[in-house]
Length: 158
Image 1 (cartoon, rainbow, N blue to C red):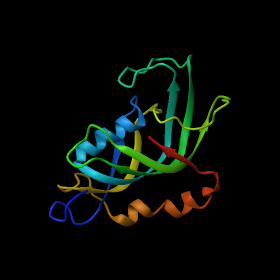
Image 2: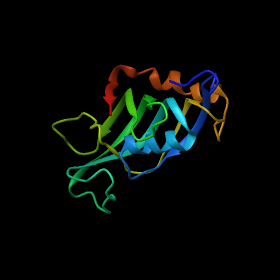
Image 3: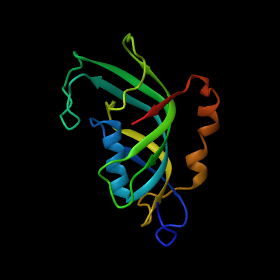
Image 4: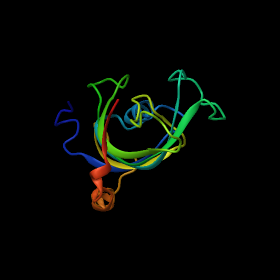
């Protein structure tokens, strides 16, 4: 929990999540970079990949012969981080994604990796000013259009 003296209001911002890490690790790095304890994020058009047996800190191979590629079309995430810790974050959200190859299980695994860097916008609570601020209207501008067809959204957590 962030205390009132540390940050009274969520600040709108935008950033880029690093590619080639798990989504959870990329978000953890972003939370540490901005000193956030809570964030709400809107992620669109993010390439993802799943490679069985690849350690979370292992580099991504240059080929995808042993895995699956996909795309997060839209995802809305709430991120929490234990106070004073950036070792672990919790992701909870909903979104729409698709796999480019046929799969029996179409769920998005908790350890899904970003295939490329991904742009996002959001709001965060921090004990210091957000480095790349923007107007809240910019963060929310595309939300009605993106959420208009939310019938295909599925839950995600990591």
